[in-house]
Length: 139
Image: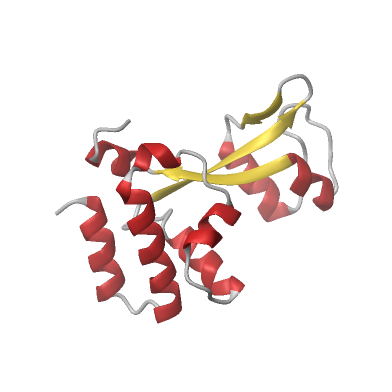
């Protein structure tokens, strides 16, 4: 069984709310068509391809697809670099911790930021997981 079929089976076998499952399936179906073409998906990109549900269900679905046993998406971050525009953040765990503790900073400059500044300078995006790319030999 491949990762796409496995993810769909997991959605069927677990008690996932229908609205969350419908978003998951829409994202899986869209991204698995051509994973290499979707290397940089913002929340807005994912929102456009999902059925209309409330925000909580949408976000729950997106993050569900980043976890085991689904492993369809990988969460990444990019931040404003002082000279090079937006660049991928090398240590995403550091950003996740900053968000949990509300200790906001720019990962390239180390400058402390307000929550609003952080939201403007550090952006979340998603990519197909390595497992999904390997399935299509697209890595």
